[in-house]
Length: 199
Image (cartoon, rainbow, N blue to C red; front, side):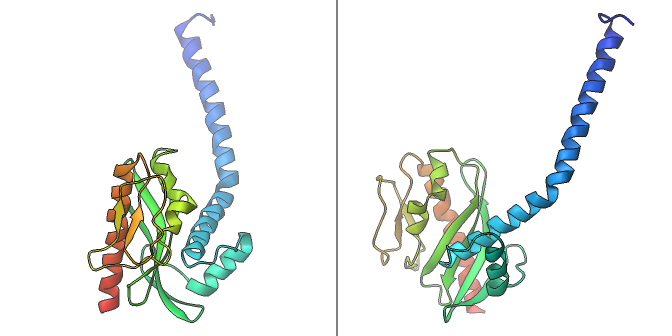
């Protein structure tokens, strides 16, 4: 068979593609258990971070998560007793500017204050909207009062709002649409917490 022939090119391309697909399948199969465990660990750490337990890592985090929250079913609200306080905690997903933002939020049982918020994953622009995963942004929610109208994310001014009683957090400078999306996401979760608390 001539190397210049169409049939040779088709067969050669098929063989090369088959070899690469086979190798990728082997790697995927070999690492799938580790990937699943890492996802579980990231989720557990987000729950712990949201309730102020940042020091846990690895197996210790998974164990502490299990002790504090037990089995968590999707985005259902979990009641947990943390340091003598009953907290409501839930995993959430909501529409950001470019894709879905996944995270965990915790509030007190009266739904009058946010205990904490952590981001698991997002598809926002790195260096702009992606800054929602930075500590300075997330820490603004810690202990923030929840007014009747919900949390407000104001236009970013390059700092952070340090008043925990005004229900306002500073948005990300240059990412007003992502900041607005975070306001909607957080307030949607607050509405679900209030509905749960009223029952």
